[in-house]
Image 1 (cartoon, rainbow, N blue to C red):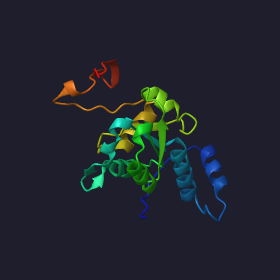
Image 2: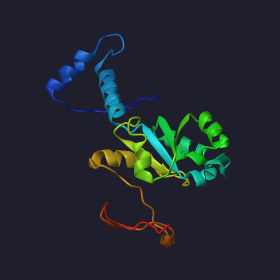
Image 3: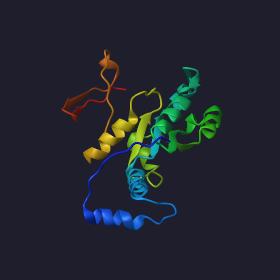
Image 4: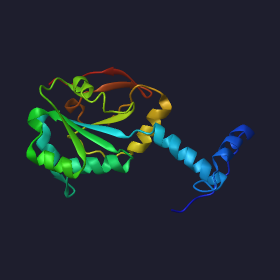
Length: 193
């Protein structure tokens, strides 16, 4: 991989700490030591888990082909391209068809089923002990093509409990509208089911 040179300034104390990491074997110079520290910091903080939510009765949409691939495969490819390592598919018990299970196995996606679908929060609570502190939730019936990495980094800088991706639509009556002030949601009006 091609490396790029940069110039940085740091305190003498920090530089002494960096120099102490140089062992002459795996870390032979300051540049390698700094790169290792930066990568470890990013790895520690970066979001690694994602949950794909889909109602059991609607999960066959995950098998529909978009641009030559099943929607579930499109989602997994997109999530992994943005650094996501562990993907969970959360669906109702009726949604875990054999075809969905086979595709999930091929894509290394863990299926979690709900006996009785009770909404998003109870569903996510089933994963409480599996998820890291930070995680991504996407809707299973949506093809995403935005820069998730940019959104994750924005979220990490904000120090807020959640960041929600929104879209503008020419047909807002099909969706649950939100009212914004700057980048904050001030009102959410759930769509009538």
